[in-house]
Amino acid sequence: MESALEEIEFLALSENRVQVLQRLADGRRTRSVLAEETGASQATLSRVLGDFEDRSWIVQDGDEYVATATGRLVATGFTDLLEIMETEGELRGIVEYLPTHAMDFDLQRLADAQITHPTQTRPNAPLKRLLDLLRESESVRAFSHAFNEGSLTVVEERVTAGEQSFQAVLSGSAVEAVADDTELRSQLERLLRTEDASIRLREEGIPLAVTIVDDTVHLLLRDESGVLRASLDTDDPAVRSWANDTYDHYWRTSRPLDPDELAD
Image (cartoon, rainbow, N blue to C red; front, top):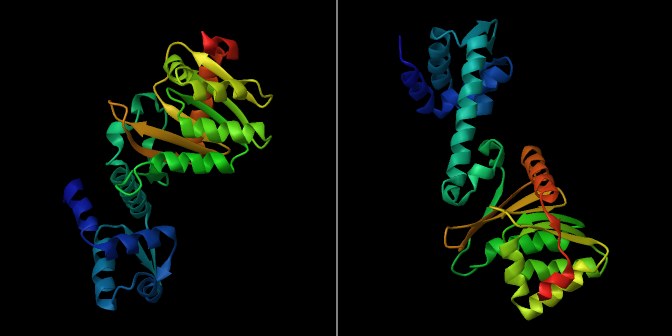
């Protein structure tokens, strides 16, 4: 009897085997349909189907083939493994910057996330992605250890124009950095005095930079030196639920930011 690793290798080394098993797990098919769907030759299909029958992964019923219960189990498990490896490949370049200790959801939920990297010609591409989302949104909520000039400018313009609502929980360091710049402080003071903006201060700090833009969750990812390395955004429901719950927690454990205290 072959070991589990040998069985995995048996499947992994042949795309035809994977495709045939996945399709039969999805429903019964004739050999001609399998050939059309997979592009495999009849000789290849004969070998694949024979190997699967030897393992009791499929059975023949008339001129059709169908996966057994164990065949469906193998197909599901292998498909899950493929999806996990695809997700890992997408995240490999940014995993060291992900605040995974504060991310209470399965990383596989990031399989379809859009990852934006800085390049030599577009070093600010991750930030530009966030600004593009902010310019198109009606509702923005954020919890962050930083509030950059670009985001503040876009938010202040749209909120002042009545085109956006904005609620945020910022760390003390984020507010201090803005208050230290005269122009940015004036922008933040104007934003705080609008009806559609509310900002709270969290003295304990915030280990993430998350913006919930309508139904999209966006993260800015920095290294230990504070250098922007990438951004990630997704509309996955589980990630959005996590972001909403985390935002609510920070909101409850913070206090309103008074515009008068910015000048202190």
